[in-house]
Amino acid sequence: MTEPAAPCIRLAGLAKSFGPQAVLRGVDLDIPLGKITVVIGRSGTGKSVLLKTLMGLLRPDGGSIIIGGVDITKLPDRELLKVRNRFGMVFQNAALFDSMSVFENVAFPVREHERRLKELEVKRRVDAALAEVGLLEHGHKWVHQLSGGMRKRAAVARALVRKPEFLLYDEPTTGLDPIMTAHVDELIRDTQDHTPGLTSLVISHDMEATLRIADKVAMLFDGRVIFEGTPDEVRGTDHPVVRQFVEGRLDGPIQL
Ligand SMILES: Nc1ncnc2c1ncn2[C@@H]1O[C@H](COP(=O)(O)OP(=O)(O)O)[C@@H](O)[C@H]1O
Ligand SMILES: [Mg+2]
Image 1 (tube, helix red, strand yellow):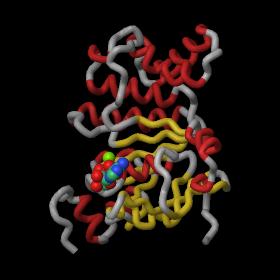
Image 2 (cartoon, rainbow, N blue to C red):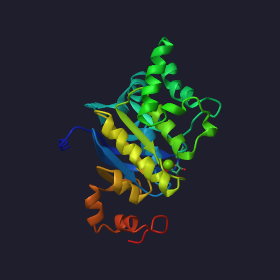
Image 3 (tube, protein in one colour):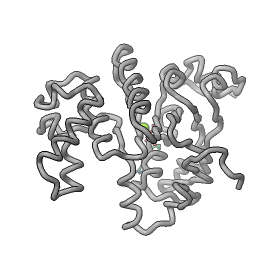
Image 4 (cartoon, rainbow, N blue to C red):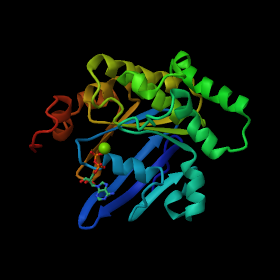
């Protein structure tokens, strides 16, 4: 194995099947630390499975995930739990609790993990996270009173509140209109730029948004990463599958 050029999370030969269905078939990918990497691929290719495997919610059948020199796929469950705490996740549908205020949603992971924390300290942390996403004035609102974009912001605040090293976003703009999409893209970029040391991994099937926010783009196809590069390299490539994505022929048949 070659040494990575810069510090990264390294996925090598990552494999995951469900019964007879091989979803990940040997994913090789370096995720550089301190940057935004976007994994693009059409729906059903295993992008969410990749995220869940990376953060230890699913056990892979083979391959390795090296974080800080440790292969986390080999860790016992108790150690894996600690690794999971280093990740924050923004789920595809925001996944907020409707029966709680925005403040309580963001406070939830703090209360869950640090039960003895004083209320004043909980409030300090939640307010800091809400301020980061521009929702400080909206903490008292109920989730159903929020617009789609505000929900995403609340979900990002909840993912950030425990100061994760790695922030994962699963299709953060799916279902949003173009204006909201642009706001969320900006939020991802701002969050990255304002959080020292943060590493962001974004799953997307929107090529335009990808090219706007990514430092690095990787394309998942047929269970493997078939292309990696900068947004400029994506624009300039003549790789046939990537070209079909760039040209927006996303969910039709791939012609090789
Ligand atoms: N827990 C699971 N059990 C069985 N099949 C699953 C499970 N999770 C995902 N799959 C299957 O794996 C494939 C990839 O799913 P997913 O990662 O959600 O795709 P996407 O790229 O759209 O995020 C799909 O065919 C899906 O049905
Ligand atoms: Mg998905």
